[in-house]
Image 1 (cartoon, rainbow, N blue to C red):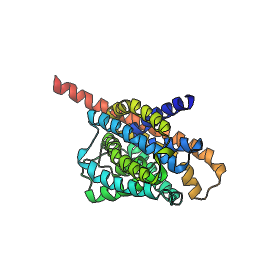
Image 2: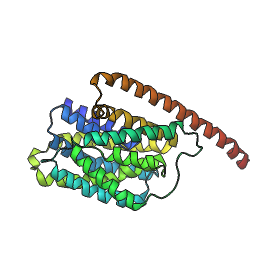
Image 3: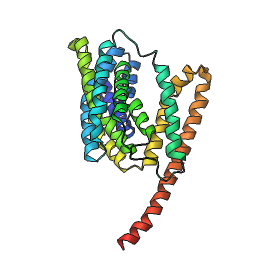
Length: 298
C-alpha cells in the first residue's frame, strides 16, 4: 500500500510538470519504475496505459482553459500514434539506447536556444502567429511518437521543444496542444504493447496509481499554463530541457563524469538567472500595457 501511495504522489508530481511544461510524465514515471526494478517493456507499457487516462484529463483541462490549437491535433497526433504503435511493437527486440545520445544533443541545443529566446531576447514580442506547415508537423509527430514508445518518454520533450523553438506559437498553446495530442500517442502505444504482452504480465496496480495521481494534477497544471506569461513559461521549459538532457549530452560529448556536478550547478544558476530576466521583462511589459488600458477605459 505504501508503494502505491508513493506512485500516486509520483503521478501527481509528474503530471504537474508535464501539464505545465509539456513534457516529463513519461520520462519521470518510467525512470522511477526502472529504478525499482520493473523491466523496460513493462515500465513503458504501464506508463502509456496510465497516460491514456492522464492525457485525456489533461487535454480536457487544457481545452477548458483555451490552451489547445485544435487544427494541429490530428496532423501531429496521428503520425505520432503510428510511430508510437510501431515503437511499442518493436520494443521487445530493439533498444532506444543507441539513439539516446543523438536525441539528447539535439534537445540540449534546443533548450539553450529556447532559454536564450524567451529570457534574454530584447524583442518586445517573443512569439509569432505564423501557421506551422502540416508537412513539418507530420514527421515531427512520427519521430516523437516512435522515440516515446521505445524509451518510455519523448513525445513532450521532442514535440514541445521543437514547436517552441519555431517561435510561431504561444508557449501555452504549444504545451496544451502537445499534451492533448498525446492521448492519440498513448492509445496507439498501449495497443501495440497489449498485442505483444499477456495481460497477466502488466502491473495494473502501478497503472492505476499513476493514473490517479495524473488525473488529480491535470486541471491544476492546465490552470498554471493559462496564467503564466509567455516569457516565463518558455524560459521554464528551456531550462527543464537543459537539465533533463545534460547528463546524456555530456556522455555523448565524451566528458568525464566528474564534470557533471559543476555543469549541473552552472545550469541551475543559468536557469535561475534566466527566470529572473524573464519575470522582469514580463513585469515591464505589463507596466507598459496597463497605463494604456487605463486611459482607454477612462
